[in-house]
Image 1 (tube, rainbow, N blue to C red):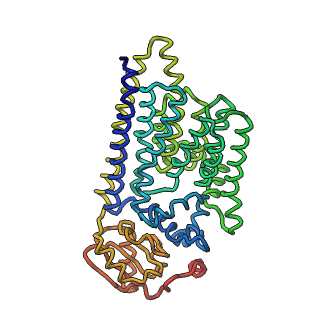
Image 2: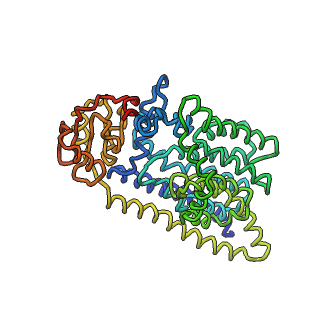
Image 3: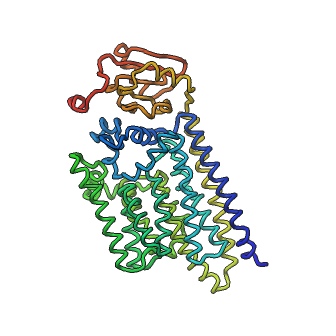
Length: 468
């Protein structure tokens, strides 16, 4: 029995063990961060917006963004109505539920990547290679771990983008159409992947489109959604889309473009280095180029939440490219040499990915981690009027995700109540110290201090806030 035949028979077990270990490790690491008050920034922004959604007059309402940007809904920070499918998870499973959604997103995506690799005709070893590259890519693991922010709605791009890619490759066009609608409404940048894939098909070829008619339909729907979410919806709501405005400023200022290219983060080099077989499938790899270009010009890191989609889409290019790389090597009698190179690649990336997660997490826990016991949270909560604006230290957010007016530390002066960790140096600790006698202590223990500001109304209106 040949190596390929043996591996074909044992591959399901190998993948099952890998998926189980990978998922357990990532879930454990994310919950460990939450235990130490980390991974809370965007996590509680999303959790709170979902809690505030009543499907009547409040849709993803964010008190934080109401004061910070004059945007009462996350729909106008980014166009993301698909996020509403997480409403029951937020209600039933809270912060932990959203963390697990993000932690397991790559496993869901990897199952469809495996189907794509099978359909493209890859052998068992090359399929294993593609899955390892996807799951252990350091940019993906860092993005999924997201040690400071915890959860981001872009994780849904994997939940819908992976089956969308498979449906397109398999020619399941009706299913692809439905998935495309959900995918495009996760965030406006989803349209960039469709545009990149379309350009790739026109210039080279890729497995995503059967012909020009389907391509035109996909691009047309993507363009309408992109313009509608980025420009039309904010205009109808009477607000300015901050990210669209920022992109316009960057793209129309040559000096800012030059600065961004000069200061490009090394994460971008690493992203593409690990995906090198994808270079043999430029039409497929082009799917990630528009998003990458925009993020580089915006001076963003590829290891932030964007990295999860970039690494996955890049892994599809690796699958497509591996078919060509393998055929090229076999035709020259170098198949075993290629396999040896790929083994070294797998070993290196399997070490680099978890190492990135562990190192990033350990550093943050040591530097700014703080565990607040549940009884302290419950007592502080009981001492305040939870109907008012409440500014809370990031490490103390757990247990307050359902407040109607959850404010972040920088918004303390506009809040009726402030919950701080006095023993932990931070901007909020300095702020409450500077405010001194303006504040009244309503609860204190060895972990938390809850203050009331008698001069601020329960819910300061945005109109009053804007007046200064």
